Amino acid sequence: MMSEMWVDPPGVLYAISYVLAAACFTAFIRRPSWNCKKTIKCFLFAAFLILFMFFTDDVPQIWFWPCLVLEFAALYGLMYCANDMNQINTMYYTLHMFIIGEFTASLEWLICFFIVGGEPVKLSAFQAFNLFVVYVLVYGAIYLIGRKLYRTQIDVNINGRELAMVAVICFTVFCMSNLSYVPVNTPFSAQLPREIFNIHTWVDLGGLAILFAYHAQLIELQMKVDFDNMQNILDMQYANYQISKKSVDMVNQKYHDLKHQINLLRAEFGSKDALEYLDKMESEIESYEAQNKTGNKILDTILTGKSLYCQQNDIKLTVVADGSLLNFMDIMDISSLFGNALDNAIESVGAIPDKEKRLIHLTISKDKGFIRIRMENCYGGELDFENGLPQTTKRDRNYHGYGLKSIRSTVQKYNGSVRVEAKDGWFELRILIPVSISERGEIVR
Image (cartoon, rainbow, N blue to C red):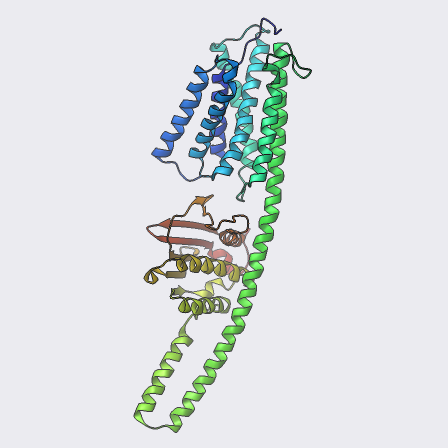
């Protein structure tokens, strides 16, 4: 039998702890700005969770699991509305916040139970003060830890296997920490209230440590995968540049040979019609000579290769660029940056059925102490953003979507910034690189 001093922790304390865990997570994860609709949804989920757990505090034990499922669903809804993540990622982090909430509430109740000397604890001014102090301290620590653990420079994409692993950990921790609440004598359950509260608190803390360690390992693994994939993209774009360079050199050689042949034909044929035809042919050839001459040979080669592809696929590519501004950059960085940007734009406009909307604009200029690179292109359909970057539309997210990541990584190497925006059917990529870097010819740290 349980001690007569046994008092179940109020469910509303857990509800408040869950809501604070979700709020804490939202605070240290970088997400797009809030709007009125999102705020109302979050408020409704939080209010439902608190009120539901308040009014179902004394329900019969048979309703424990159905109520728990509804409570977890409300926490999931709150996390989903507050943070722009896909469903798998939302479930993954909701499990984390659930265990954090369990630990914080059980710790607060244990401290309160200890201070009053084992007497039954009721909601009171002291309870409220104790709750405030414990929650502030615990969630302050969680914020400091989570800001470094969860707020990373990489996009952690959780797959089904990783989600299942965390779900098993959380379910096991929850069952073990609450085993003593079941009114059945088992070899693993405690009998006295203080022992029960201790077991609940320390099992939750151990589970939280396991989740933190697992997430840290997951980040390290994904950072390695991201680095390898972006390095592969860098090598691939550089290989494409070398292939394009050979092709463009061959075309240029043929172009110069053709100019000499035209001059010979002009000397041999003196008729007016023949000369007019040769003048027209030479004018068309000279338009090629003036094309994609930006002042940077690497950029010229990339643009020429992409321009030929665009012409063959009814894509209009316009370029207004001072390529000499990029002469300080490494060859592989230029090929990766513009190769990825143009490939993404070409892929996007290539999916548009209306050929008149297959437009790509590229500008490179110097303005107010910065090199400004701006890539615009039309797009169709809807784009989902996460961590400031649009998510890939391909089904296999594990092996796609690294183009913009590679661009961001390359720009950050030069202390620059990347911003993307999609509005009114136009996708815009904007890059800023401090001019001081290019003037010195080195990266300023």
